[in-house]
Length: 262
Ligand code: SAH
Image 1 (spheres, rainbow, N blue to C red):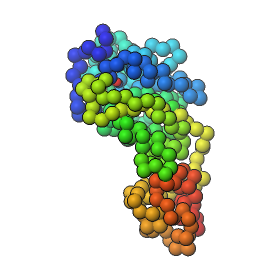
Image 2 (image 1 turned 90 degrees about the vertical axis):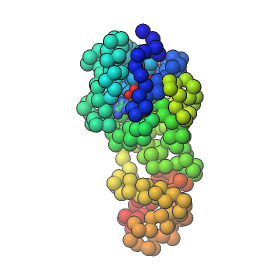
Image 3 (image 1 turned 60 degrees about the vertical axis):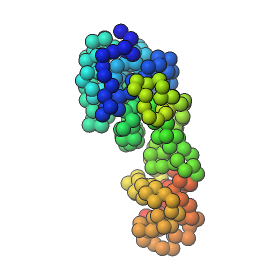
């Protein structure tokens, strides 16, 4: 059966917007590049399988999917898109990624938009296991993740992800190709693990500084971070004249060392 004509009713509370356009689904599937040889691939939220059908039977891929909706899972099994061993019925956010694949893997999916950022924070935390991500999410979030320093859209998630991934904005997808159409436009992005092993500063402190800096993103850093600075002499450094969105990963590393090591 064509996955577009199913009895599965889209459920709003699960962020279900089923993609109707098969050529877009195929384009998303073909955007996965086996980065660093990663053949293990997890689809998050296969729904009725519009993307799954291009991936699950590919002999080059060791494929699994995780889906929270039992009705979709039953449909995927009944259609023969997935074998029992390939489908996990459950909530991705409740799993440790290493419980799904113990070896490095990639992630693909038209993400449920309400949890897209949480999925990507999990990716950041598991960057040595998750080497590539191809995903569709709200266009605005996609632009934020892809934003370069100096752009207003830059934020905590972009700094975190850009530390360990090459981020690419692949293409925009209009709402009319979904059932039901979401209120916002969508976009497909790709993340590929870069060579960076660790921060040049304490990661915990880096995270504290980045979060704090963006909490008050309109303020210059001298004001936004003043509670964290114990040595007032460092405040004359030019980095403190900037706002959070003007800094790149390296600047934040330097700022972290300045604050905690001086
Ligand atoms: N891939 C399909 C469906 C996208 S909609 C398509 O392109 O048409 C998002 C899908 O994610 C839905 O099937 C929804 O049930 C599923 N989902 C929502 N929250 C989830 C979670 N926490 N873990 C796993 N799947 C989830």
